[in-house]
Amino acid sequence: MSHAFSARVRVAPDVMFRLVGDEGVLVNLNTERYLGLNAVGARMWTALGNSGSIEVEPARLRADLDEFVDRLLGQQLIETDAGGESPRQG
Image 1 (spheres, rainbow, N blue to C red):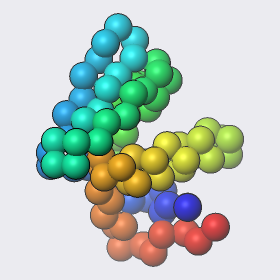
Image 2: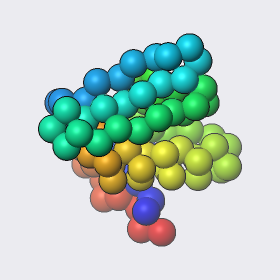
Image 3: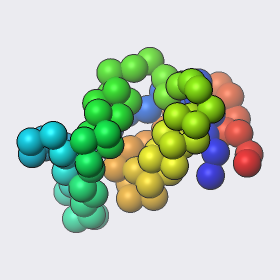
Image 4: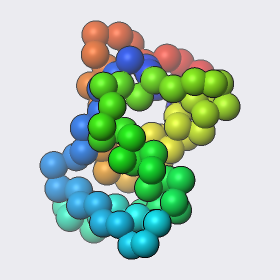
């Protein structure tokens, strides 16, 4: 799935994040789903929370982030707001 990289993201209302060393754990308290993040995933999660959009370069990083966001959406750990643009189709 491809996402509009101008979209703003926000943490879903009932999601908790904890760092354990360099790694992280995301838990959705509503669905009881969790996702373990390696050090790179934990840094990406932090970057998503601190950025104005999910836009990244170069193309490889963009593809990796797209896959990561897709997993987060699939597990209902984030919600997106298309920011006035339609999501890209891919």
